[in-house]
Image 1 (tube, rainbow, N blue to C red):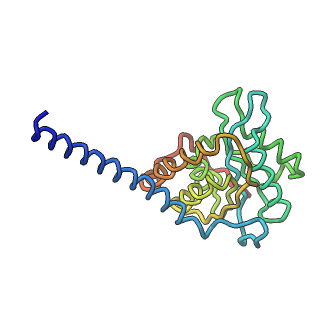
Image 2 (cartoon, rainbow, N blue to C red):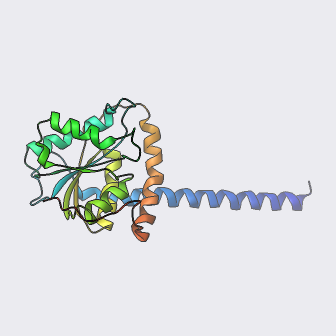
Image 3 (cartoon, rainbow, N blue to C red):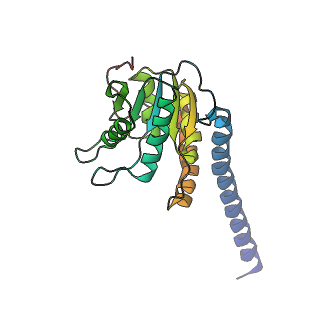
Length: 218
């Protein structure tokens, strides 16, 4: 290869490297911004709750084929029941995926709430919470919530709070009890990209997959 061709190839490689570095900086910068923006709204269960909360919103996650909860979902529901029993809010809004007849996150969540002593009349089910964004949009437009506390794992909480703020909700978050679940490194890595997607969704604010008529919590 001639000296001229080698120089051209080197410049191309350098340009590609710079593009990769810029893209990586943008991805990481977006993630850091989402985390930073939500830091003041993350509370511990020992703190005094914000006044006049409309509900405790629990974001669903996986259930096993037999309907039993995954450890992550059980941890979320345990924290939500603790806050309900401590008087944070009068309603639990359980939002999860029930897109198939044989898969029903919210039924499992309701069972855990009842087992925790929450009266059935204080449990509200959202069967179309197919994503964090959908759950928050529907909490606002279907269930007419304005002031909420969100329950999910710590790594997920910043994104949920960022989206809630973008949708005009007054929201705080309390993390479920920490766990040493397998695969957490991969979840943390995926969450970086999910936070970047959240920035786009906050700008565009598309309607969720399903909306429907209002069903007030009260």
